[in-house]
Structure formats: structure tokens, C-alpha cells
Image (cartoon, rainbow, N blue to C red; front, side, top):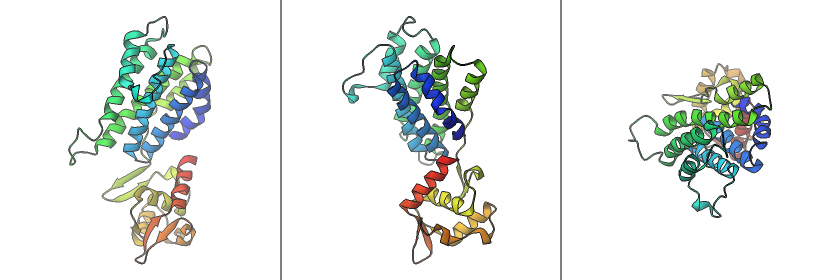
Length: 263
């Protein structure tokens, strides 16, 4: 899923930069891509944090676009307050598009309220609150970026081309990892071999260790035969303790992230 966005990243940046300040655009795109990556990795809390940064970047982008100055000190910038200022103070002569002037700030307030209060509204025995919040927040962030792209693309690219980019932004996304009764499953589009699958499983459970037998069982559940499972190929990336339990090293975490980012 993420690959579609990444393939469109330069096009989105170029078009948005024709309407908005380039450094603001770069910040918006960077936080959006990070939000997606962490969502797909199942890192709900970090995905929500990145969504908050995305919203802050969007509001700053719109505020500057309207000819307004940002506070000299970051602590004086409150995303929801400035979003409301855009709604209340910016007129149609400055930003004529209602979607950008009104709907994006309203959606931003909704998202920012969720990410700013995560963890405090739920009981510990409920459904994972961060996962639920992430699944709600990411589509709204995608819609916000799609609206900015739609606004920027007017009269610059044809409708069909714009629609393809918008569709890539707003398509539904799914986590790469799934856990069922303690068993880890990895999206089979993300790996090409047993060693790659092993690294991703170990990446998901880090910083915990996993026994060799458990890892072999998980690899078999990903349709790898015993003959394909070669622990010596993992030796540069793992630590095995005296009981045969495996921990992913820093080199392994870096390699796993390379695998995740290239698919």
C-alpha cells in the first residue's frame, strides 16, 4: 500500500510546492509517510504521534499560505487553536476553496484531539485503544493530504492523472503484521525468503527473545519448509543466548527496516 504513495511522493511534493511553501510541504509529506509506515508495522502509538506532527505541519502550511506569521516560539503554536483561527479569520478572498479553508481545519481538530488524548480515555481491558485510534486517524490524514493535492492540482494536471494520485492516497491500508493468540504473521508481499521473513518476525517482537523452535514453527506457518530455514544466514543480525533464544541485534533491526521500506 505504502509503495503507491511513495511512487507519487515527488509528484505530490512538486504540485503542493507550487501552491504552498516548499519546506512546509516537505514536512507534511515526511510526517504522512512516517505515519503510514508505523501504522503498517503495527506501531500504533508512534503512528498516532506522527499523525499529530502531520496535523501540526498542515495547519502551519495553511496559516503561512494565508499570509500569516507563525509564533517565534514553538510552544506558542497550538494546532487546534490555529486551526480554529483559520476557520474564523481566513476569508474566501485569501483561500477561496471551502475544502481547504474550512473542512481541512475541522478534520485536523478532530484528528489532533484523538492523538493528543490517546491512552487516557480507555480501560486497559478494552480493545487496544491505540490500534482503534490509528485505524480512525489514518484515513482522515489521507483525506486531508488528498484535499491539498486536489486543490494544488487544479489546471496543472489532467483529471485522470490527479484521480490516480488521490486514489493512492485514500485507499484503505492494512497492517503488515498480524498477531493471533501470540502467533506472528507477516504480509507475504513484504518478504521473498525465509531469512527475510525471520527478520521481520524478530523485528515485530523486539525487544523480546524468541526460541528457535517457536521461530521455526512461525516460518512453517508462512509456508517455508524446514530445508529453507538456515539460521547461519541470520548470524550477522541476531544474538542467540545459552538457551537457544533469539534476539534481533541493531544490524538486524536496520536490515528489517530496509526490507519494509523497499517493498
